[in-house]
Image (cartoon, rainbow, N blue to C red; front, side):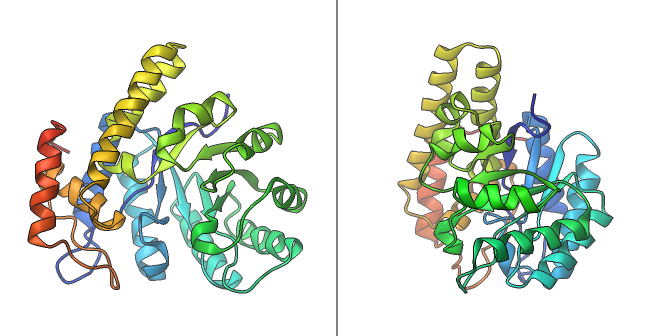
Length: 298
């Protein structure tokens, strides 16, 4: 059994109208997901607008999520930044609040050797002294964590525990699992097939707003009821496909669905993200109603 497994929503970061962190709504989102059965959270990652947050905001988010989870779900805190020193500071601060693990994108913008990337991870992980998850998101970082690169990291980083794999070669999941790593698939459409080749679960943004749909996949698969798991994956994938038909940008979409379901205002994404138009809001409400995603009490 993996130490980190199940459905870990990649948390959004709700904002107030003035653009500042909405602490009370963040706590509500965490509670909503825990009540739905979430096993943990991937905090302040891509869905959480990580690189648009200040160090102070990251620290506050770590504090709030730890307090609200209160041992009921594991917290993996993203600390990635453009420099090793910045990421290490955020890692140290996250550890101060008792997070269960940290996660980190590789150093980006400049091309780095495998050894440089591994050293970056070694320094960042040592600053926190908690398990480390690599965040394989080449579409955003320009750096793909291949099995070969992961082996270099594994050899040099004693804190390495696993990764979120959000790259296109899904078959790498098997390689990472064979290396003894807790590998979360980072694509909500591929949760079930990824688990059949070794993934320990899912980390992605859509379960923020629709946690029960992906929890259903997990529970069916754990019960070895493949027919029910396949039906649950089809239902979850269809729901997110329908939401994507609104053509609302991802960060705005996730906040919009949560706002509809929880009856709160999750705010707008940080610039250059744009607020939802009234036309988009009407489209979204229509789809939420058609999918029978009733409002819930967080």
